[in-house]
Length: 326
Image (cartoon, rainbow, N blue to C red; front, top):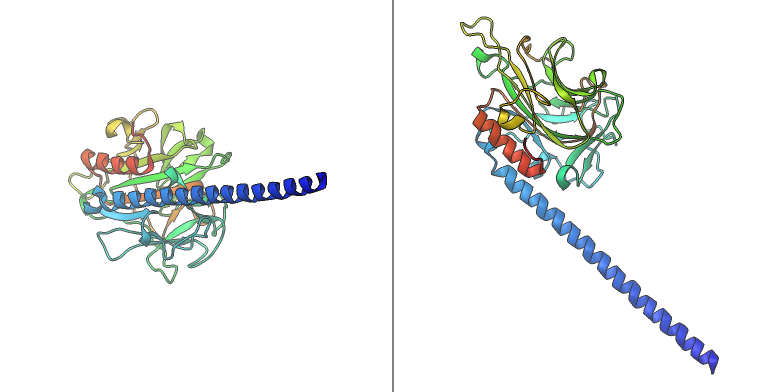
């Protein structure tokens, strides 16, 4: 009799266990599906925000790299997928750039990958800090050959090389003891300009200008997401009004783009020499000062935007990436 009860109890327990497992499975599937729907909804919202942003109507766009649009990458990527091409989505021109590994077109490496839930839970390009041409992107004017090119900002000859650049990034928590570059446009140490964390200067946010000049903020580049904005007023010695050669660095809006102190900075002693040869994303050259972390958006204009336009672009990026403006 006891044996029969024991068997019945065991059978009942197995049935209960099966039901519990089934219920848990259903719950997990529901949570997974719910998370996927939330992620898709967030991505769709970011896409709509991007497509309706004021950037689209600004005629002075020179480069626009971002990660939420279907056109941002040549194929749909899974989380952790290797980045072989990041497309310029500039709506103002048919002649666009392609950011590809400096090692060559279609080079595949885990050093640069797709983070499905990067900054603010949106897609980001992830760099793992590898100082090699497989860990740094370079701009090309061709999707099939590595035809490297810098971003030229020469629309106004009376304000030669004037530009405005917006960058959205997040340094990895583990990044330490090195220089980390978001962007260098030109040949480092010779011409152009770039933006990086300078390990030799207390990890300050630093704008590199030409061969040796720098503009540094009064604070270290942190491991939280930021919007950095650089403006350069241009300089043309041949002009009757050559310009002021003023470079400003604003972090998260720089108090409505009115502050150039504290974590913001300014300088007006060195002109930006026209960038030549190439531009790099996530490095200073093809193999040096690699970025370790995420980059989600880079917008370069070939002029200095008015304060009203600076604020409009910053507000768009702030809303998209949930980064409060100062």
